[in-house]
Length: 283
Image (cartoon, rainbow, N blue to C red; front, top):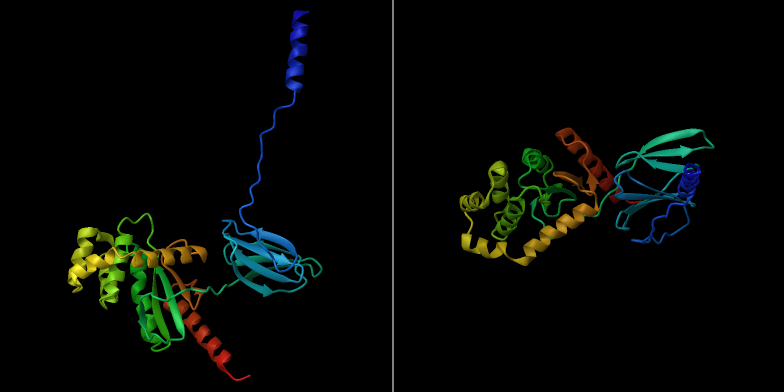
């Protein structure tokens, strides 16, 4: 009888409902859309949102909710699926088609106040997000300068600071280079820093500043100027917003460079020159 009672009690305990956890929903960002959404999807890293609308547009948003661009698409598209950062799978049920497409976004990049090499009025800006302790950035320097030399008057190189947290001397190097810019020696300092990217420390950076012929007293004052830190922070925030995750990340008139070679660079520059020429032609 006692065993039976224990079995009954065990069944009662096992069949009792388990207390559910408390779930809360917190709205972090509301995207106010221009038209009714048919589908909303995100890239695998969650950093970009795509909205397929009822009036056949794809609207692209950053994770922070900033509209990065939009384009009209085939009304036959029923759904979209991100395939990496720049590719989409487009499903067209009525046509029995699945289309892989590449999506290219031309980013708006603020180059005001940034050091540049080449003609200031050049129609094409190569904006490079760099870190002075990055070996890949150092390796890319000759290629970047080669592009400026190949297209005189048409291309200018714009330096954007993106010091990585993992590189302890990168921010100090960035401040030193910007301070050098005030003495008209940014590119001298730039080149010396990259020639010594794997040997940087405070003492070495100061020695390179001496080698570049900088006024060290003026350098010391400029490096603590909040404006220079603000310029670096602007570049970091802007780069993060447009998808910069590592260095070097390069944009040609806002278009992300995929192939970091002379041929890849040249194709993108030539395409931009042709586009600008066509745009300038009278209609």
